[in-house]
Length: 187
Image (cartoon, rainbow, N blue to C red; front, side):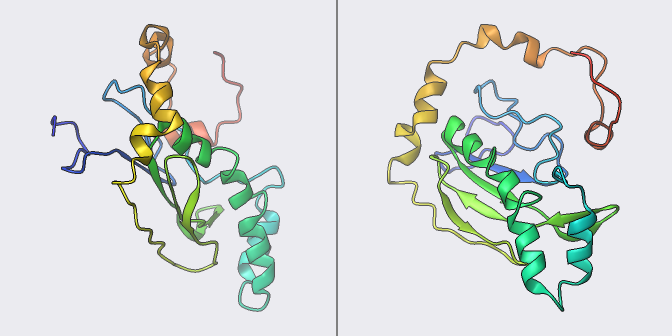
């Protein structure tokens, strides 16, 4: 296509978000698309911390219902539902979200892999406490992307207002440091 990394011969865009990729979904193409700089997608521990999730993870074989409730609750799927469908909808693209399952350093990854269409509707998902792949048929001929609300909004964007979002200030941090920072961030 036009030589932009990630471009394919498919005449559509696809957002891929993987937990731990600080710049997951970042648009460097000037398309005005999705920019999630340093957000560490899907790895939020929720307001209740990891103690409950960690306990449920250790007991997942004896109490599978407890870990499913945690993975679907405010520390897992419910948190994703605050922002992931909006990213797909606002940018008018299909989104594939992947995340590890289980212990990762001091955290428990809650999985919740899913595929969403350009309106933020879930096409396929899983919340099981095991490795599992989700598959979805993406019918690119339905006209969902060109007519999606997000795609039409992108046509009306005003890039001159974005300068402050892409300017370096010298206070940037790597994604992991930003994720676990305890000091306030001046803006």
